[in-house]
Amino acid sequence: MKKTSLILSIVAIVISVATIVLSFVCGHSKSNKAAVAGEQIEAVAGDVVYVRLDYVLNNYDMAADLSSALDSKAQAIQDDLQKQGRKLESDAKSFENQYNKGLLTRSAAEQQQQSLMQREQDLNNLSQQKSAELQEESIVMNNQIMDAIQTFLTAFNEEHQFGAIIGVTDAANMVIFGNQALDITQAVVDGLNAEYIKTRNANN
Image (cartoon, rainbow, N blue to C red; front, side, top):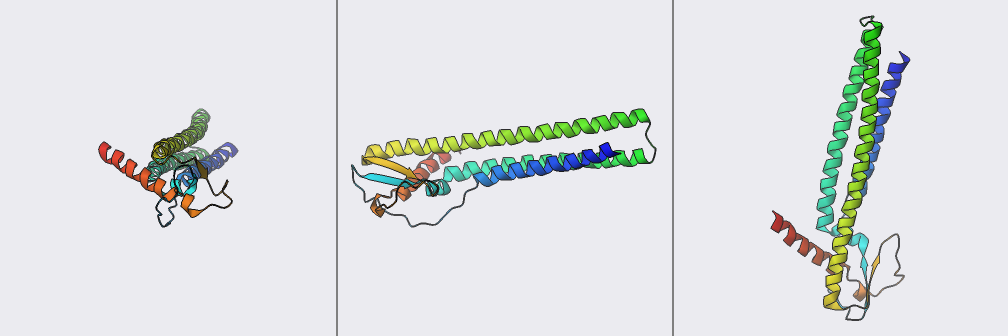
C-alpha cells in the first residue's frame, strides 16, 4: 500500500510545517523585557531627542498583553492541528491494517483511501489558512502598537515641544553618539504604560 504510506508521510510533513510556522509566529511576537533604570527628562524644548523603540516594545504592557493573547491563540491552533493529524494518522494505520488482512472489499478500500487523502488535503489547507490568519493578526497587532506609540508621542511632544523625536532600533540605529539627556525612552515607556493601565482598567 504505497499510497497509504505516502499519506502518513504527508501528514507528518503537514504537522511539522504547521508547528514550525506557528512557532515562528509565536516567537516573533514574544516580549523579552530588559531592566533599565528610568531617567528624568533633561532635554528642553527645541532639542532633538531619541527613543529606543526596541526597549519601548519590550516594556510596553499593551504589547505584552496583545502578544500573550496571540501566543495563546497560536498554541490552541497548533494543538488542534496536531490532534487532527494524530487522528488521521491513526485512521490511516487502521485502514492499512484492515487492507493487508483482506478485511475490505476493493470498492470499500478505494472509498476509504480516497476519504483519507481528502482529509489529508483538508488538513493541509487548514494549516495554511490558520498560518495566514495568524500572520495577518500579527501584522494588525504590530500596527495597533505602533499607532498607539505614535499617538502618544504626538501628544507627548505637544507638551515638551522638542525639535524632533527620532526612533532608533538595534538594527537601524541612526544615533551614532547621543547625550543621555536626549534619551527620552524611559519617560515614553512610563507614559505609555500609565495610559494603557487606565484604558485596561476602564474596560474591565
